[in-house]
Image (cartoon, rainbow, N blue to C red; front, side):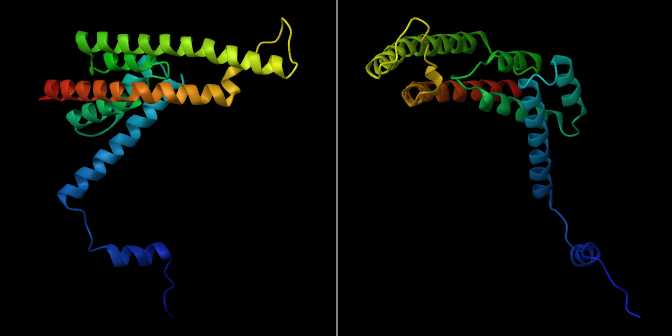
Length: 185
């Protein structure tokens, strides 16, 4: 009687002579490390683990230490967003040894302050416009406080300001990546 083989057994038979070359192994290892690092960073940013938990989990990732450090620094740079709260990203820069040098840190603080100042100015303008629209629609009163985050005007303004700052942020990220690459050489 003929032996019935599962799909897995058939696949294993057909691929048993296949293997990965060195370049494919390195690429696979890098992708594996990238995925694990991103999961750890996401968990940290969502406050699911603390500083100690990040260190512990990063240390538990198997692989080349220099590759882990590079992937981690790249992920931190990529994770920086001028429109968001970056306190946890900064903490990770220092916690993981992907430290910001003083000049880049000052530049970043100035960039974030300028962005915040511009957003506050625009928020007041948009809030006044929305208030005028509500008055025109007959919606008035001292307790009327529009939730401007839900208005399309605000979303458009946020996108506009973020686009205006994105070029400067990208330039800062590029300089930070260069500084980190020099430090790891």
